[in-house]
Image (tube, rainbow, N blue to C red):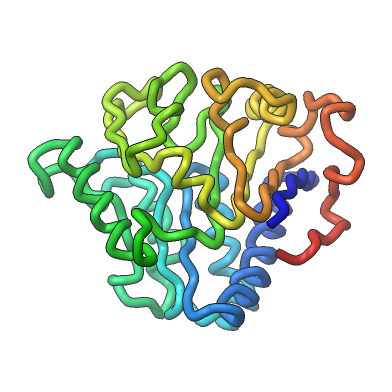
Length: 267
């Protein structure tokens, strides 16, 4: 199995969200045709919600058999159900609440009050992942995992200089000291993320340019966790012009640089 990285640059945030949405619909239809079901891991943030909203507004939305997809998240703010800052809430409003799916298809992280503390919540969600995993595995293989990237290069709730970046045994971690509020979060670990067939990182804005440049330059995952994201089949960076502005062209191999006018090979 060959892993490939691609960087696709789009003129602005709107065209970026629309392009990612169109590619997702096309790809997930292919995945569903090839196998019995699909697991999709979502992300939060402005662009995460924008992509989901673009999927919802796409004329091709109803060509997807949504009943065959289970939805997860890479991380979650440890806030009450329905809180506007929860990734789950944003994803529901942008897309999930508009789809003909059963609540059992939505595998959201626990919220405060559902377990004794955040550590127990992390352990409990590891059990949820294990229940959906193939026999002998501790978590499902995600067919598509969406990730945002922070200006500091963090992905999910794996932050620079935090020991969580190097965790290889646990499946879910409780982050108690996030550098951005809220302090308490739940997150998948890097090995779980990297077990995904496809990782799609979506970045927009000049504030992400430095993180993108360091990621492509092969920075240490301790300094730039995004540099450690690597899907089993493919890793794609979907970015707008502003996010790509500070990336030296020499850091991007000619066969890895794509524009909105190009099509990704299948996979």
